[in-house]
Length: 449
Image (cartoon, rainbow, N blue to C red; front, side, top):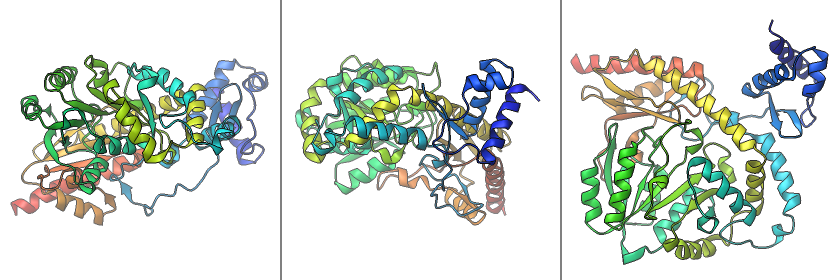
């Protein structure tokens, strides 16, 4: 047995015998290197394996600690394969690491807990975010960054506030994020849709809509789109920014899965914006903790005062503890380590999904499986009824949601099946996709009979 595996096995045995308890530090790298007569790098490799298996977690300058196992709280019944949920997997939340940051934040910001803070955000977090966002090629000044209660609050503010020249219509991709569509519906905000498919957007159609002169803002998810999983090309993004400047339109870029973007992938739309037409949203809900309710919104200077007024009188300020804990989590390097872990997990899930669909009959469906992210999709041919496929698979324990929920009311939905791998393990992807492909074939046979 390789020495790092022997070290990992030794630690697992100590955990099983309860010789190591939650909250207590694990044996140090130095101690294990001496005990096993090996290099420190070998011990680090052993701990890295246990981190990947979510057995331990690391706190910089403090060492390794045992992860406390908890019930996930998922509503899924045993045996159900969940391709429907867009929520992140509770099993890989950094509970213990973030609890450490919360405790530190309570001690550090205890005076602020009894007072209102600036509605723009905790100064310490704004400073950290300005540096952090640069990692995503978003180079923003602190005065243009706002901390909101999730990206949903940022979207609410943008929908509510007046834009220059009193434009009123919100343009959205079709399909799009359900949370925005429901917000537009509840507030009865005028909205239009533009189709987004596997090949991206029809930029001529987009320009025609911009040219009408009444588009308040255009909402888009350039990379790893919700719910298709597709990404726009660099050429598309550059042309969109030019059109936004030409027709005096603002673009809201929802970069909700920026943490999963692979190194070397295209920069965000914001990076191409030299005319200050892009409003950039970065959520921490999908890749950190949804209940944290903290997001960053980068707002152009011309909109800053209006956005600030709405933010102030909407909630008087986002939770100090949440903001302080996030600042500590980012600054300590924990988020960077967590991002690396998430990238590996979701890249492997998509590789497994890609491997499964290689056996797909291309006369039945056309697949898009990205290299990472939460979502993939299959465009079904006319011989396949997507809703019937969803119903049949539900009876077999495979959950999918209709893509109709991702369309504005009155807009016809594409005959597309959407898949989320956020809450599926590798074995479930293999078995679930086997059932999906069999059902697609069975539906065509019914059509031909």
